[in-house]
Amino acid sequence: MTAITNRLIGPESKTIDKIDFLPVSGSTLDNQIRVSALEAGSQEVTKIDFQFPAGSIQAKVPLLASTTANLMLEGTASRNSMEISETIDYYGAYLNTQTYHHQTVITLLCLTRHLPVLLELVEEIIKSPSFPEKEFDIFLEKKREEFLLENEKVNTMASRKFGETLFGDHHPYGRQLKPEHFDQITLDQVIRFHRDFYSPANCRIFVAGRPGKDLIPQLNKHFGSPQWASSHQPPETMPPGNPSEEKFILVEKNSALQSAVKIGRPLFNNHHPDFIPLQLLNTILGGYFGSRLMTSVREDKGLTYGIGSYIMPLKHGGIWVISSEVACKNRKKAVEAIFEEFGNLCRKPVPEEELEMVKNYMMGELLRNFDGPFSTADIYRNLQEFDLNFGFYKKMIEFLKQVTPIQLQELAKKYLNPDDFWVVVAGM
Image 1 (cartoon, rainbow, N blue to C red):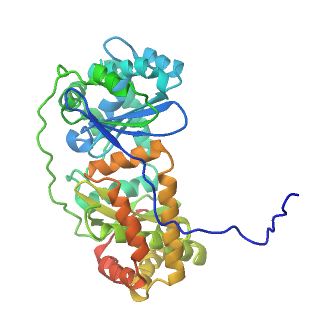
Image 2: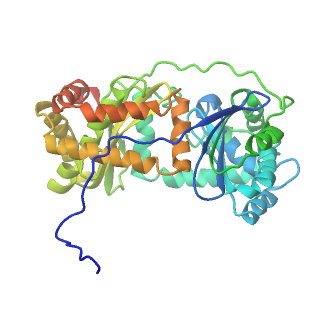
């Protein structure tokens, strides 16, 4: 006889108190390139990330690093862009590049059985891109049009000004792409940048999925040769930030119907002892849909459709940002409402019920983020940039188990002083 479910009784809830992280195995190719592998999953699919220290910081000028990475896919010594695209499509694979502050990552995702032929293609793309001038011109023109369109959006205008405001317009973290950069970049610069930074010296390879027992021999065949030329790369240096003396910056756009608001402050990265506690405080403030800012600024006061906050760790620092778009006439009220929530967190301890809910939310998000080898490998790669491993998240879990409302209140008093924050508005 089939049991009848009583739908008036909710399902049993369970507290998450640990996460079983996938094991990471380490290997080294013949030329000392390090390989980290997370072997898991039910399908014979493999994702490989080739990471190079070839980001915007190394390029020293905007546009150069991302242009180099994208043009590598547009032709090699033996294949043109169409032949590369047709090969990727034929094997049902995915190949992409992504440029960050300090790194560029080339990602291959494919069925494991196609690795031999696709690794040969990726080897050509990394080692012998042809950088055709025609593709260079087409790419720059496309990016110029995208830049001009994006720069009409108040959120983009505020984001670009925000970086300059917090770090200074000459600081590597504060430099912003400007129209004149499209006329200054040359194909020779691209070729030199590839030669100097796409070498095995600091290459890292991250593998996830079911790559099979032939993974290391295949990687050695294509990327482990001692003859693959290396280059000398100077140590990375970072000057101190030079934030604006003005705490309120308005970027006017007379035709704007809304104002984009960015409120933030320089911070530290995930090595600082307060970084993990601040992740919890930020989640309560504006890090999820039921946060204080969403409840107050959106639901109670009706000043915005959406608002959120986040903490971004950087290799040489970090930032704390609250972001929203509001009707121009409500801009001042929205800023005041945000700072009001700062004060509330400083004056009163977070209620136990709210704290417990947010802790459970964060644990659930951690479980979701570590669901599967591909997402787990992405997290591991990001941790490695900071010389960290999964132990970082074990510390976070232990903190969430033990934190008290009084601890969070003291943290808020320390870091949520409105005088320590900059306000950048684009619009009216």
